[in-house]
Amino acid sequence: MTFDNEVAIVTGAGRGLGRCHALELARRGARVVVNDVGSDVDGTGASASAAQAVVDEITAAGGTAVASTDSVATPEGGAAIVKTAMEAFGRVDILVNNAGILRDAAFKNMTPQQVAAVLDVHLAGAFHVTRAVWPIMREANHGRIIQTSSGTGLFGNFGQANYGAAKMGLIGMMHVLAIEGARDNIAVNAIAPIARTRMTEDIMGEAGKAMDPELVTPVVIYLAHRDCDRTAHIYSVGGGKVSRVFIGVSEGIAHPALTPESVAAAIDEIDDPSSFTIRGGPVRVDVSTR
Ligand code: NAI
Image (tube, rainbow, N blue to C red):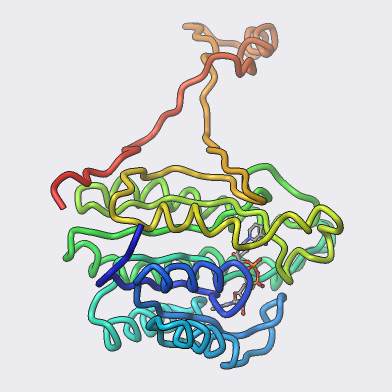
């Protein structure tokens, strides 16, 4: 799978998962915008060296990349990241919304500031960059967007109500953009990664040894490719294992005169997941006319 003549933006690509995605996209021929503010895990601080170091790595390996140190967390930052791509390379084919921070706290201690900071980077950040790239992809009748969600959003995790809300928000955004983008061959998918990075190494312990961030990147490369016809899919990926995560609707019951008592009487049948459907919009884009 190669990306000759294509251009990719990877946010938060100065280290961790984003760095791996950027290196591999470049190795396979894409010209890459390496975006990163170079912050600490909690989003404080900034350093231009994180993005530049990855650009230097790509260049040393014979690839093409430019650095962007704008924050995804503001509309101006999102626009500036995409402007960097257009000025350097004149197009954008791929956007990997990956930038992220943590402000963990048990919910009883969580402050509005901790909620706002996390929503701003993960959720609003993805909106800002995607909004800037959307007209370009529509005009080109081609685009591949990958959201970085998380098991915390999909399944829950103690101390991460802010982060879980942001990560599930990215899934809601994905479903709607997949519907709106299908006619223009814009596919929007999500990954829920598991990888040993500075964000997770303290909590992963021994299990982290098998969780190289490089083992997440193959799914991103697959979803970024123009031959990939999947859209609105979510893939859990870590340590070489890949699975689809989906939202299923149980067969449930239908009762013309539903009462609280009939709900209570049938609750096990309503909850029964053994028979379900997956509802929603398109699950494929048409790659035959490209
Ligand atoms: P990381 O901390 O190594 O990388 C995140 C990068 O985002 C950092 O380089 C940081 O400077 C950058 N960043 C932060 N705020 C930014 C902003 N406003 N604008 C631009 N860049 C910004 O962490 P990691 O693990 O590589 O995380 C990448 C993504 O994967 C995040 O969205 C994270 O929530 C998600 N994720 C990671 C998991 C894991 O197991 N490592 C699990 C589930 C999700």
